[in-house]
Structure formats: structure tokens, C-alpha cells
Image 1 (cartoon, rainbow, N blue to C red):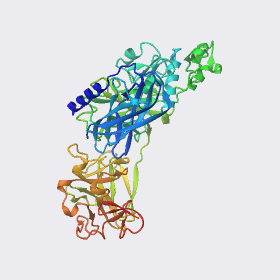
Image 2: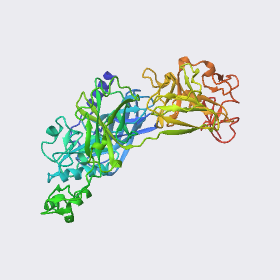
Image 3: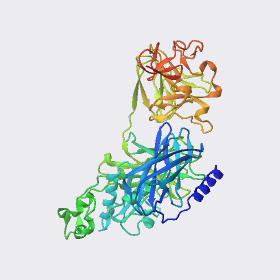
Image 4: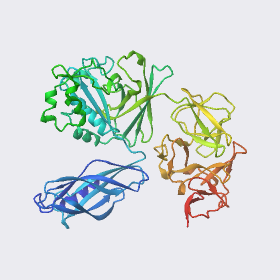
Length: 601
């Protein structure tokens, strides 16, 4: 692959013989990696085009070559409604084929002509790295604003922070660290953080790489946002039953395999917003903020431009609401040691839990509903912030209800441990497709661990109450997989690909009295699994011919399986796309017949 790529580059360079002062001269440069979710039909890749020629550019033609297949498409033509001026660089979106299998592939983007003439630039191509993943990465940016009440220029950093949080509510995660004032914390941002990051104020750091100067941090924020990450991070926080401790759980899930040797750790910050007291006077300077230097400042500056907010000689404001104030932190420098260990496998979640204790000690907190927990993912090998997440603290639900209104069988996947109510039996499925009872439904203290895919059997028409718990006591080994959100099915095993397994979905027959696991897509291909549900993954080499396209669960004998009659499947295995079995596909629409999608007109 490397030799092929180098040869192609060398050939293209030889073809590009004209200098930078040519008439028609457009050079492309990739804007970074492109992430595409498996199952998508198309993707777009951002590419910067620079016009180095002496003519404005009205159109280009280009080809796309996919390095995995060695196939090239095109040429394609792109017309510009507004011509690309001499010396202008413009970001455009290039449609590319979506990937069908997990992994990274280079796509060569080659501009062959400009204004219907030969492209005379010296390097007319660039590589687009297409990353095909099961789950798209969500990159968020950490903003750490070191500030103080006694600092007259600190309102500039506060304004820049609040403006970014307003403009990017899903991507900007802010923390305000007060230094030497009444909002300063003695339990947050210790370990030399103030010495290293707040020698002068204000100091608004973007992902700890560089400081934002002035009231507009958009450019620096967007540059950091464009820095791709393979690592997704999410955090949840709950009050315990005493109401004095906060239990936190963080989940880290790679969407691609990280770079070799990378190590990671998690740090935490508890923040409080909505803090306001008239005696908290923020030093400012009304005459400066009313000058032309701040005429284009965002609306967050209006508070400091309003003379009615000032006291004394217009050097202090009162009544300001302080947000994102750091109350307590853990592992804030490099992350908590050993918080994430072992290999990082795509789509395999690693969790870490911690607790913020004795919250009642913090008199600074005014509204518990405005507390947040920030979880920071550190790349400890390269000493940088990889990603960040935040959440509010909630009171957890203590129980949930499942209605067995369709049939006796159901699947369940939850990210919290729970107690199985009496009357509900539990089952696991082996790699050969054998359904094995785990508990018979008569025990009162059966508990299942979080993130355990389960096959359950109750009684049709009944509703059962499941209670959450903190521990589990039941061992389950199953070929089922599940997800807490809508996701594409995956093997769950890095040694297996989609071509090595069959995927089965729990569906129901026409009487809604029985259920079974069947192909949801032709030849057992991947499908979209619903949140809280489970699906069956069986290695192809282990599946017997009788169970190839699926099997029925026999309600009459709970430990047995009614296998498919492979000689007469037509009357037993025609389903609507929602999983309901029908005797005959007579109404126009899409059906699943013997595991294959069939259109009836």
C-alpha cells in the first residue's frame, strides 16, 4: 500500500510541471480526518482550495481514488456561484463514498482541471483520510478561565467564556477558577495549577494549549474543535440517598483504535453556577469598556457597559452572576492515576467511578440544581486534553417498569445494576445459539450487573417492576449484545468482523404469543438496534443449518428451542419490517421472507 501511494504521488508530481505563476492554478489541502458511520450512504469531506493562479476560478474538475480498492471515480465538476479570487482560500465540501467496513482508508482528491483547462499547480492533489466507525466522535473543548474579583480586566475573560458557551452549548465546557477572592476554592485546582496557568490575570486557556486574548475566542475555539479525537467521553452524576454525596460515572469509548502507546486518565471538577451576592464586587473599568475598543464585543459585555451596575467611582460592579465556578476537583493536573487501564478497543466502553463527598460543607453553593460535574479525558502520553464532558447532578430513578404486553419474551440492556422481580426468569445464549436458563423466576434477590444483555421471560399481559441496586450477584455469559442508545450492531470482538458473524433480532409471530431470533437483514447483516434492547451475535462457523436464519423460542417448554423447518419455511417466516409475523405477504410493502428483505408490489 505504501509503495503504491508513493508511486502515485511521484507520478502526479511529474505530471504537475507548471509553476505557481500559472494562469489556472488551484491547490487543495485536506482539512483533517473525515468520520463516517457504518450504514451511511454518503459522506462529505472538507477540503481547502487555494487559487494561486492569475485568473479567478469559476469551476474545477476532480477525481477521487480509493486506496483500499485502487478504484478511481470521476472526473466530477464543481461550479462556483462566486468565483474563487486570486489568492483566496475557500473551504468546500467534497462528496465521497461512505465506507462499508470499519477502518481508515485514504482517498486521493486530485484536481485535474481549472476553468476547463489543465490545472497547472505543482501539487494538485491531497489525501482525505476516511474513518469508518460504528459511533461518531463528539469533540468538546475545555475552557478554563482563571479570574478574580480584584482583577479589573477579568471581565474580558468572563465575557469571552460566556459568549462561547452561548454560541456552542453542546461543545464548550467552561470552568472558572477564582484566585485569591471570596469565590476561590481551597479544594479545587491545587497542585500548582494557579502558579503555572494564572501568573497573570485574566488567563483564559483553550484546552490548555494557548490563551485566548480579548473578548472573542471563536477562532481559537474552532481550531481546537477541528482537532479530531478518536475518544468519546460521557459522564453521569447522581445524588446518593443522603443528599450529601455525588456519585459520578464516566464512560470512555474509542470510535477508532488510538495511536500506539497512548495512555489516558480522567480528572473531575465540580462546578457551581448562578452565584450572586451584592457584596461580591467585581473590579472593572466602565470608561474602558465604553470605548471603541469594545464596540463589537458580544452581548455578554453589556452588563459591564451599563452605568447602573457600577458603584463608587465606576471601578466596581455589583449584582453580577458568576457561573462555572470550581468548587472541588480530583486529578485536575494529569487525571486520576490508573483511572483508565488496559487496551483501548473500538466500541468497547471503559468506565470509571468516583464520589464527591460531603457537599454540605461548601457554603458557596446557592442552588443545587445549578451544579455540574465536568469529566476531563487526559492523553497522559502526550500531556494534552483529549476530550471533555459535563452533566448536571440528578436524583436517580429507583425503579422502572417493563410491560410484557406482546408476548412472554423480551430483552433488556441497562447501564445500571437491577433486581429481577419474582415471576421473571432470565436466560443466556451460548455461541452455538443454545438458550440456557440462568434463574427460574422464583428467587427474590436476583440482581444483574450493569451493561449485561439479558433475555427475560415473564407472562404475557403482565407488568413487572424492576428496582435499581448498587451490586449484582448473578453471573451471565451470553452471546447477546445490547446498547443504551440506538446503535448499529457490532461483533463486540476485535478478532471478528461483520462477515464472520450473523446478527439476529428478537421478533414475534402473527399470534404474538411466541418469539424468536431471526435475521433482520439479508444474510444476517448488521442492523440498527434500539436503545435498551439486545441482539444476538453468532459466529457463522458455529451456527447449525437448522438455526441458520433463526429459531423460535418455545413458551411451552422454557428450556427448549423450536428449530426452523428448513424444508417448509414459507408459512412460518414471513415478517413485516417491524418484526410482526404474517402468513402471507399480500399487501404492498417491504417484508422479511426467510431472513431476506423482499418488496411486494
